[in-house]
Length: 177
Image 1: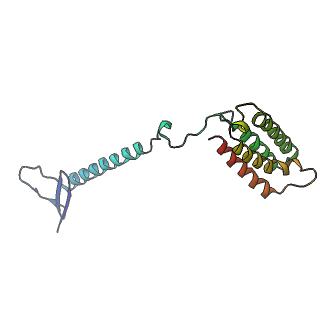
Image 2 (image 1 turned 180 degrees about the vertical axis):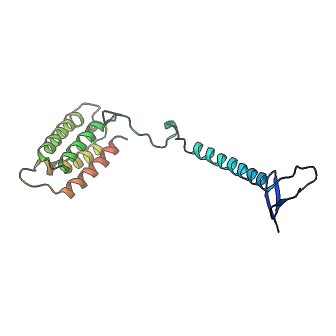
Image 3 (image 1 turned 180 degrees about the horizontal axis):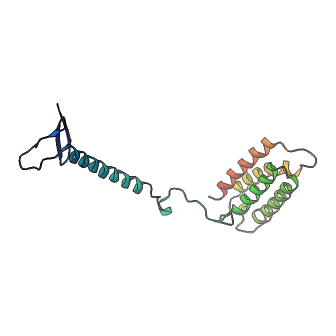
């Protein structure tokens, strides 16, 4: 019985432990040499696959990215809405931990900062440049912070606060555009 294995540039024929030449002029290949060549070719092919996989895993440079992500400094986005987003995140984290006093304090700072800069901040404020967007963000912010600010008289609903928080963050994303 003959077992023939064909790969580019490798031709071996084994007959139950003996070898025979395939073409005259080629050196005789015993079973051991034939297997070594097959393994070498397989290893070379696997290395080629590995190289392509490694090259495919190289990240795409940021200049090719589809969506521009804002840079940050100390965890705060360097965007027009970044400071408001950071204050909202801090307030919400404190709320989640049950620290209603700190959450309310941060919510009040958020509200005062927003009103001073975007409502009465001059010609570059959002109220002047895009009053419709200002109104949407202001309304979303109020829905988020009012239950937190009133924590002493009425316990805020965690699900409602989280929903308002997420909506506020979505509106802030729109404000960064």
